[in-house]
Amino acid sequence: MTSEDLVIDVRGLDKSFGDKQVVIDLSLQVRRGEIYGFLGPNGSGKTTSIRLMCGLLTPDSGTGTCLGYDIRTQSGAIKRSVGYMTQRFSFWDDLTIRENLDFVGRLYEMPGRGAAVDRAIRDLGLEARARQLTGTLSGGWKQRLALAACMLHEPRLLLLDEPTAGVDPNARREFWETLHRLAAQGISVLVSTHYMDEALRCHKLAYIAYGRLLAQGTAADIIAARGLATFEVRGPDLTALADRLRAMPGVAQTAAFGDTLHVTGGDAAALERALADATRGRDYRMESVDTGLEDVFIHLMRGAADNFAPRAVR
Image (cartoon, rainbow, N blue to C red; front, side, top):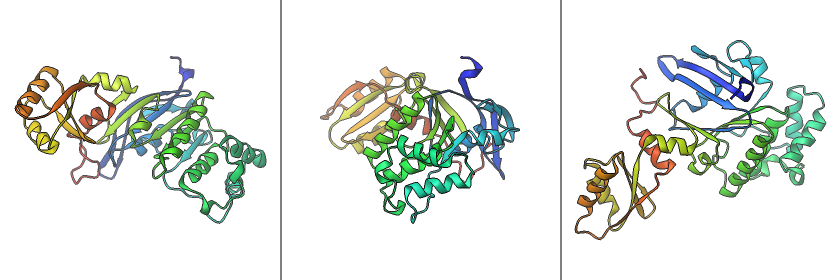
C-alpha cells in the first residue's frame, strides 16, 4: 500500500474531556474507496475517534494525516474535503428538498450552487420529490436528503454517524447500495453503526470499547483472530440451560438467537464437554456452527466498561 492509497493514517491518538479519557492510543489506516465501519457500545468513543481522525477535534497526543493534510495543523483544509452527516436530522421542515439543498449551498458560498444542487438531487434519486416539503418526508427520504447535502461540495471522504438509526430495512438497504456506489467512485466512508448486517457490508471494521480499539480488519479477519468455537443449541427452557452453562468451565458466553442458544468458548473440546454435561438426559439438539460477527462482538464486550460508567478510564 502506498501513501497515496491512504486517506487516513493516524497513530497513537488520545483524547480526554475533563478527567475522562475517551480515546486511548488509537492507530488506524483507511484506504481510498474503502467503507470503514465503527462499532461499539454507547459512550465507547466511536464518534470522538472519527472526529479526531478527520481533524474535527484536536487530539491531546498522537499524529496523523487525513486526505494528505496534517490533522493538527491543517484541519481547515480537511473540512473542505469532508462531508459530515450527523445522527440528528437538522434540515428545515418548511422548505422543499431543493430549497434545503440550495440554502446549504448558500451558507457555504458555493460557486456553481445551482449545478451542484441539480447534481446532488440526480445522484441521490431525489428528482421526483425535489419540490416536496421536507417535513412530509419519511425517515428514509430525509436520510437521502442529508446525504445529498453532504455530497454538494463533492467531498473525498464521508463521515456518517449512525446514519440509518430509525430507518426502515428497505431504506437502509438502498442507503448502503448508494454508499457502495460512492466507494466505487473512490470516495472513502467512515460510518458508525449498531447493526450487524451493516457491519458485514463494510470493507473493514473497527470495534471500540472503553475508549480502546479492541479489533480491526475485515469481518473474516476479526472472527478468525478470536479463535472461538460456537455451538447452536435447540430445545426446552434455553434460559435455564444458559444459566447452567455460564458456570461451567470451557464456556465463555451464551447468547440467545431467536429459538436457539449460541454457546461460545475458546477451546472447542472443552466447550463440547460442558455442553454434553449440561444437556445430559434432556432433549436438546446441538451442532457446531461458524462463529458469527455478533458472537465475536458479544465476546469483546465482556468485561469492557461503558465510558459513562462512574469509574474513570485509566
